Structures are given as structure tokens and as C-alpha cells.
Image 1 (cartoon, rainbow, N blue to C red):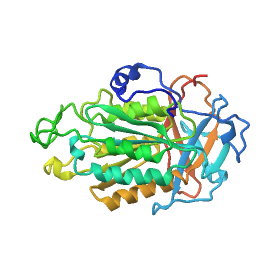
Image 2 (cartoon, rainbow, N blue to C red):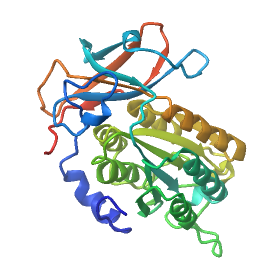
Image 3 (cartoon, rainbow, N blue to C red):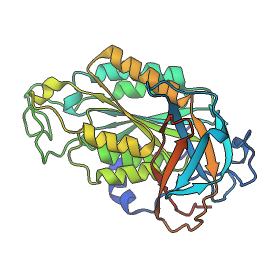
Image 4 (cartoon, helix red, strand yellow):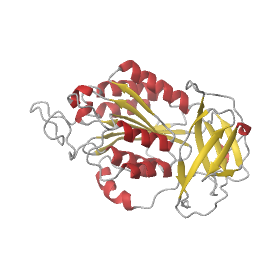
Length: 338
């Protein structure tokens, strides 16, 4: 059952209204007395605690397990913070947004994305996890609301259709030719990320992530990249981008979305994995994401700056062993709704 009502075609309205709406806060916070061993039971207490999920890797990119609270230092705006609780491989519920690009550039890879994406959801979702499915091209559509039913999720992925008129040889919103034009109205990627974060994930508790299957090319979003990043940070949602691209669609000119996707993922604690149009690479990428989501560390701290003034606070987690930390870059000190 849906956690809150939302219609399949409501996103066109939300894209206009949601941008001006008050944002949901970043922290779903435990009490200051939460123990190192059991923070999950106190997540509903409304206090000002910042919560961080992160991965730790060695110089070869391998995940590092079995570290303790004493292995890390946490800084906010350059000032050291006192860790109040710490867990490894958190068993908190996982909420996933599976987001599939159905614009014309994906016409030769979308079937691969549906198959491998559905298999990933079957692999990673447990009885306490949930996911939803969104497709985006010239519109943003919710194909499946929150559910743990992997059959429904697969059926939703199968509904995603590329918006291409093969009979005429033209691509709606793409300038009528194979190479996207700069002012084309057609791939609302930033709007889709914003709506997924603001309208779907912001109210959820626990671990949250978005997985984008796209070539990273935005055309025509009302919102900007920074709006999408800010919404994801306020929702405390990690963003992964799997760059799936049929390079032949671009007529040899290439595409320019990868840089923006790296900004989006680095600011939210995820990463970009370039898979092109290779089935095995996409499956391997999903396997990597599954391992990362199941091997997260979770820290919480009460910030020394207690002002809830909406300002952006830079975050940094440092490993005393100089391991690489994969975590979001900051959060917004926004007052939580009761």
C-alpha cells in the first residue's frame, strides 16, 4: 500500500508547486541518549541530531568492514564534533527510488536496464525495505508507489517506454534528428531527482537512496542541478548514477552529462558508474551498489552549532587510517516538522 497518496501524473504539477514549497529536513534523528549499539529504536524522537551513512574503502576501492567509532573523526564546517552513536552494517530499513530514463537516447539500452534493474531489486530488498519506480523523459511519471513486492516493481519497470516515433524517424522534443539540440524540451532529469527526493523520500526514515539509469543528459528541466542536489541532501538520500548510453544515438558527438552526474553523486554520498551499453557491466554495477548499501557505517552527532537557520553545513568524515570515505558533502540545518 502507498505510504501517502500520490497520483501517477501528479509530477507535472509538483514540478511547479514543489520548488516553492518548504523543504523537508535532512535529519530523522535519534535521541541524544541513543547507545552505540541500538540507535534504530529511537529514530522517531525529535531532537537535533545529524545522521550520516557512509562507506569506507581502501586505495583499490575495496570496502573496509569491522571499523569502530574510534577510527573516525567527524567535522562540521571544519569544527570537530562528538560522535554520539555509531553502528556498522546498519540494519535500518532501506528505501530505494529506481529511476529510469525513457528519453529517445535510451532506446537501445532500456530493455537491458529493465531486466537488470528488476533483478537487482529482487536481490537487495528485504521484508522491511521498500522501493518505487519513476520514469522520466518529457514528463516525470510515478510508475509504482512504495512497495516491497518485486513483481509489481518489475511490472512498473516494464511499463517504461521510450518516447520515440520510429515511423517518422523523428524524436519528439529532440529537434527532429538524432543529435539532441541545446534547447530541446526533453529529458527532465533534474526535475525527476528533485521530485523523487522532495515528494517521495523526504518523509521516510532510515537509509534512502536513488538509482538513476540514464546517460546524464538533462534537457528542459524547470529546476537546476543545484536544486536537485539540495533536495537530495535535505532528504538525506544517496544518489547513484549508472551511465547507460547508446553512443550511436549522438552521431559521434558524445554527450555532456557525466560531469553533472558526478557533482550530483559526490555531493550526496553516491557515485557514477559508467556502463555504456554493456549488459555485464550494468549487472556488475548493480552488484557493487548492493554491497555498498549493505556495508554502510552510520554515525550520529549533536552539532556544536545548534542554530536551525536553514544554512548549509559542510561535513567531513576522516579515517585515522587514511581510508577513502564515501559520504555526503553536507546538510541543511532545517527545522524538522513535528
